[in-house]
Amino acid sequence: MIAIVVLLICGIVTFKRLGLDQERKAYAKQMVEVQQELTDEKARTKDLEEQKAYMKTKKYIEEIAREKLGLVYKDEIIFKADNN
Image 1 (cartoon, rainbow, N blue to C red):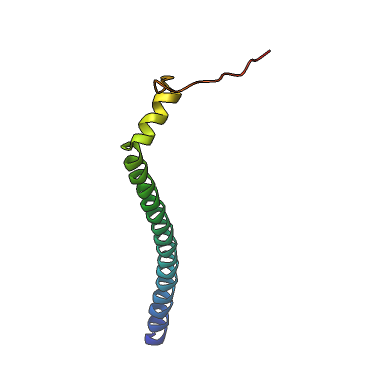
Image 2 (image 1 turned 180 degrees about the vertical axis):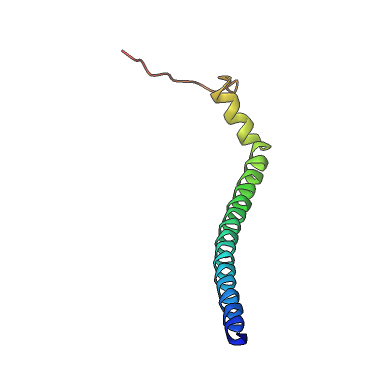
């Protein structure tokens, strides 16, 4: 009777251990995914900071003024292609 109880307890412990191992593997996989997301977000943040710094430059302002507003310098000559 005692041997059966001991074997039953060992079976239950082994079963629970297998379940915990699967859980641990799932959490490890999730941790790797989160680490990758963190790395990606850090790279994105760096890109955004660089873009923010670029947007404060004179070159960016000139670029936007030319593209969006069509502005040019006083002594600048613009040549347009004839679309015929």
